[in-house]
Length: 105
Picture: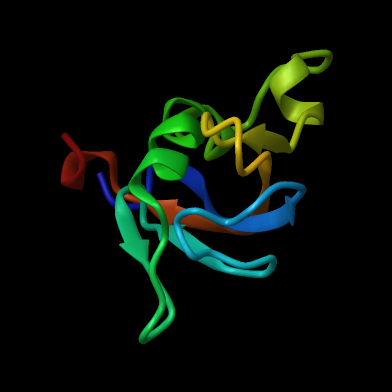
């Protein structure tokens, strides 16, 4: 069955840093999550694995349509766990992508 579902591609962007950037990221640094599980970084850039770990549990839900009133449909900001950085990330939906569920695990 071809294209029997749709998922959103996402962009996770460093929205603010109120402390010192221990990991070397800056406001505007980002990665894109495409085609369900393809993580893309701009060439020559990095994204802190600990910041990624803190937002990762929410990305599967943000890729899907959510019921009206679900708090996750409204909330877009997530925090890195490093208390010295006070780094906040914004999760945005980029585009809705038709997908074949048989291609996913």
